[in-house]
Amino acid sequence: MRWEHPQSAVDPVCHKTVDPRIAKTAIYGGEVFYFCSDTCRSKFEVSPDTYVDGSAISRQTHVSPS
View 1 (tube, rainbow, N blue to C red):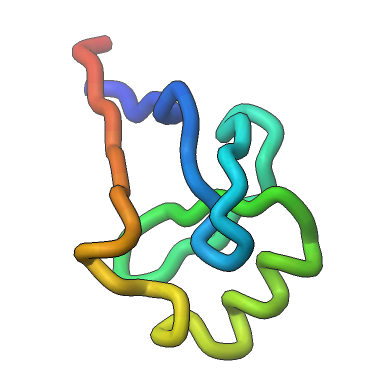
View 2 (tube, rainbow, N blue to C red):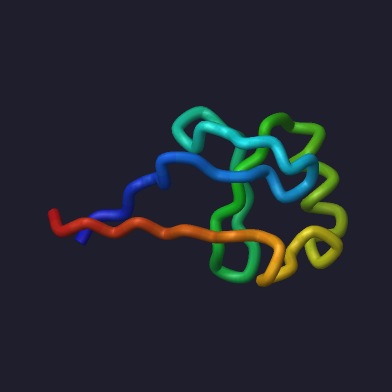
């Protein structure tokens, strides 16, 4: 199996739609989060629990056979 970026993602800080192929990233709780900027990623890294809410953020992991 091979991991692939989702087609789109939502920045958990500012809620903008981002292109995962070029977005900034952070891993928290085994999940990959995508950000529109270093500023949003920095805010997330200081206090991730503020932004992580399973009901508010849809997290997608795409796996395809290699």
